[in-house]
Length: 311
Length: 311
Image (tube, rainbow over the protein chains, first blue to last red):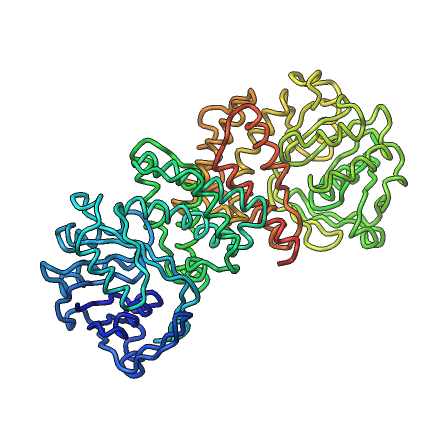
């Protein structure tokens, strides 16, 4: 299959390189690193094996990419306003769009860009990975993708095309977990992202600090309880004991600065609306007001705005 | 009357100096600035008139202060564990203790130190004042004290002794507002302190930033609504329109870093329990859980602990 990687950062660079190394035809869209990648290719350092692709198909403009079978949206949700221009350039009526971003209902802008939601799939990546310099990606740990159909008409089952994608990714060494319900998967991911991404920015704290200080841990738990209730009013039940398991798993992680904390530190936009605003609004529309989540959302909104002003 | 000023910082230094200048007998308890004040006295820069007291009664130990008529608790509530030792040293059975601190039920430790609540009064200061260097106090704006009786047996009226204090302070140029209900006064002060002190630390923002950025202003409003509800479950009704008036008044202030923001910046303890923990617990005990206030309380608890560790 022919792939487009929309956004050659840590995530897109890693998965795209693994697919290319496995022999797939991969076309990388890159902005800031375009020239470096054109000259030097992509270099991956990974517990799955280090490798270097000296020559890759890299583009500055989506219009130069041929129509692909699978377009992977790999940039941050803060860049999704580009989809209206980029997706039509790389998609045919048959192209599948796989949105690998965090947040709630973040596939909507891809669906709107194509004018159809039946070509859209979404996935959550469980991945610790950084771009350390242009074209150079350091994969630290994990790497699984949980994914599923976005269109409500297709949700509830594992489709043939999902199985085809799983097979191709698996042959490239990428573990895929097929989800019958993408929204359930997204809510469960938000149970981690909302407390740990949000508090990592506001409190400038890593995962270890957030799980060991009693006041911070209590905040994490308050937020998880509210996210669980948000999911519930939206029709998704988080399994009993899931929050406790997330906390225990996080306690066992190597102390980790979330990608949102790093984005904030380096004055890059953070995904305030995708991860906080969208789920908050979904809950409020259904009559539930999660005050701790709203507090965190407003704080991040303020901090992000100020951070990008450079003040 | 004979006064003891317990804590010769910005607040204690200003009010104590004004009383001394007016001819009252004032005894200052000082720690870090003791030697400087003993040698150089106290210097006040104020819109009410600059002045210098070259020689004041200053003490390092409360035991050296004679028994006084009025003991003014002027340090931060974070130092109140000292009251158990200091108050018995300066108080007779007739001494009135005036606790000039922010927070909820912060008179309790003074009452416990004396073993009687009928000698205790409390007051809220509406004051912009900083200590700029040892023995040197810069009074910027405002200065009114709203005060009242603490003991439940005396609340509900303006007592004769309150009127005596008011008269003495007034003759020293200090505007006093007698309150029939100290707790009502304290809740109304908390309507400002909780949002503006708390968010000034967490968001590193001044009053202007908090009232002009829409997300920050929304946070201020959420917190005010919750504080109003806390007061209500404790039996105190904040007047209709009070929150809006506070916001409007704050918008008109010169951009101002709250004293809590300054304490945090200079790694001094902040009054997390007095201003946030106590009112939160009072509400929770009565069955109301203010989630935005609790979020802010837990965040400040975490940040204050880390700040004092020097990390």
